[in-house]
Image (cartoon, rainbow, N blue to C red; front, side, top):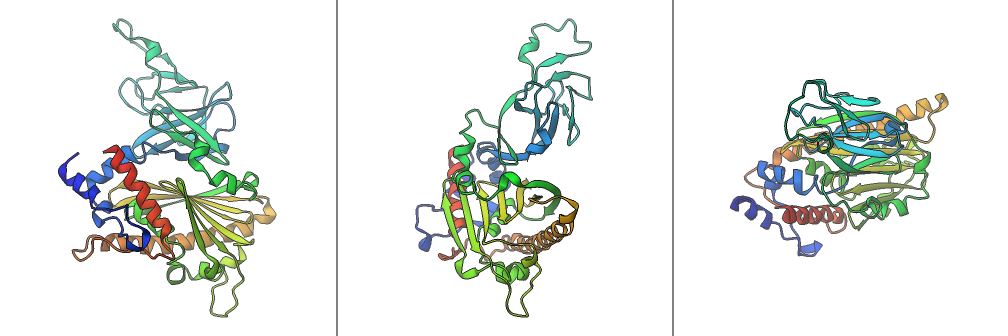
Length: 371
């Protein structure tokens, strides 16, 4: 690691208590070397949500994904086992599976026709006779750890994955009675943002601090006085009681589709967000595309998916889309401001931003271990 990067990592003091702490330096959101370190130290050493269980329910069903630049292939084997592999052919590094999802009995690289079975074993290699010291059995697709929770599929790029349920705790235990198992995927929307992925996470975790100024529709349904954050392990959850808008000037559009007693906004380190309401769930996955670009993938789930629920679901997704556009605007504004010569660090709201500090501490620990 360069002296510059070592100095940059040392610039954040995570030993202070929240009332005295300062945020991570602005260079953590812009420096190419730090973004490169995150690929291995953060995204390469944590469970990453890469797809949905409904995409790999049957034997031969597969999907492809990308984890911080690493091509991934996830497939349900003919033995019923879920597996994940490097989606890179062992011959010349072309993708083995080039479609986003599908169903197959084998995977044939479109470059030179090398073929792999559903267990990743190399089965066919045309015109390769006479090649010495090439054990076919040692040249299958490298396998990665894969596991499922609820509607989500996770993979782990490293060699020693922790148990997924332990990594996600207390999310599985505390969401057990919220009906996640009854929800069904309906639609996906993808947004590309001109900001670092951490700016988006900071915004999500600020304890509702920006809701009244940025999200008028959401502000009309959240009981801000009861909004609170609980940080534990690799997770954070923001919980807010829900209410009906009372004042005429309040935007009631979110109230039509955000129902139940409470809203639950879960975050799992480093980049997965899960918004839970009664009968409604949105998952937000933020993917780094470089130091100053990211992609946010929104998947929408509903308890009711029949035709009778179509209008409710459409309105709910429209509300989610509007909230996302508001977040895009402010996050891109923040990224521009991070380049100011007059800004390097900020302070945390003790009342609202404990989740942001929790994120920054976890981030710093992973980066320092992986340097």
